[in-house]
Length: 172
Image (cartoon, rainbow, N blue to C red; front, side):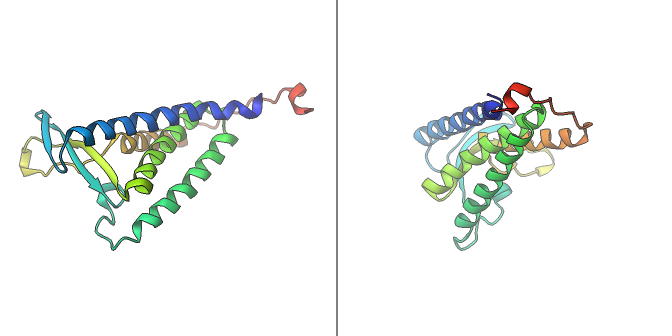
């Protein structure tokens, strides 16, 4: 049973993935491309697309970035799964990894199916100092950022001792 313990964290990844995809579906079903609706004075919903990475990095590249980001996402996700499996005793680390994995898979799904990532959350400073709006993002991006923050937090903690393996399990 110990070998399956790390897989419970994949449930959190699945929840992030499903919630991200449901929100993207709801926005694309109810908004025209690039339509924006003000929800709060500092918060808009807007349907936009990103062929690049975070903050539209490489968005205007010639098209090679799609395959590049697909490969990078698969490699990094495999590494994060390995880390999760080997650190299943560390709840904070596994939570962080699960958030990043769920977010990465949400954006990967968009990139594979549509060639671009759907973004719909836009935060802005209500015209303060003529600041432009923050680039639009989505639930997957939020999960990745929160997970990255938790990874940083975890890196400053004292390493915990992994639990000792049950002697009866070691023989099998």
